[in-house]
Image 1: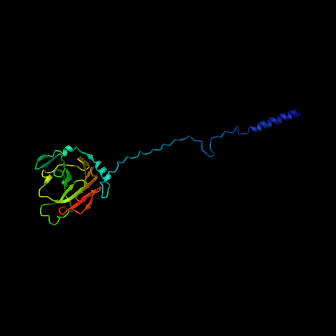
Image 2 (image 1 turned 30 degrees about the vertical axis):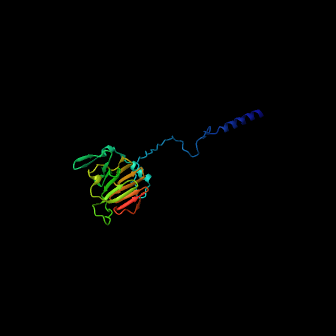
Image 3 (image 1 turned 120 degrees about the vertical axis):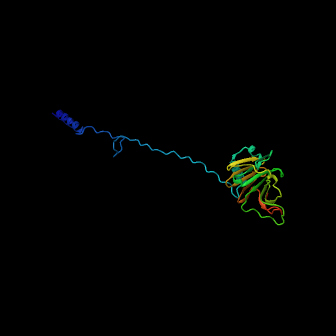
Length: 232
């Protein structure tokens, strides 16, 4: 009797342990409160960066270092010096040999290597405010004549004849172009003509606004027959 009773109680316990709902499903790996739905993948489109051209460096201003002026001039597109070995007047061309002549747009500046001054650069510039004629100068006065020897810049001087400009003008040096000759390199720009003398590490800017020196050039008292002078 006792054995039968024990067997019956064991069967009853086994039946209750199964529960009315059957086995409990595993929830391992599913966060509490997370819906069990299919995973969707979203794609983010990133716009490609827009390439922008580098800004064009502005022309050097007063006080710029000679290194910066030289670098800016050298950044111009170089032209063949062979195209600037002649001058033209009234349809007649004159070959300059080793000399160079050129003008800027609108003939604002007309330059030539002066054969009477060992190839120094001479320019006629349309200056808005040229230096006045010094007292006592009786000969023809060229207020817009600029001589650049490297160590000296003279603006305004007496000239009874056209000198190195007698043969006219050279070809145009377009804005953004640079021309190398002798110890010089010049670059034309809307802001004016910029020329560097490598031998003396000096430079000038020529425009209607006037003459701007760079490097060791400083304004000094001019001789009696010169309007304005810069020297090292």
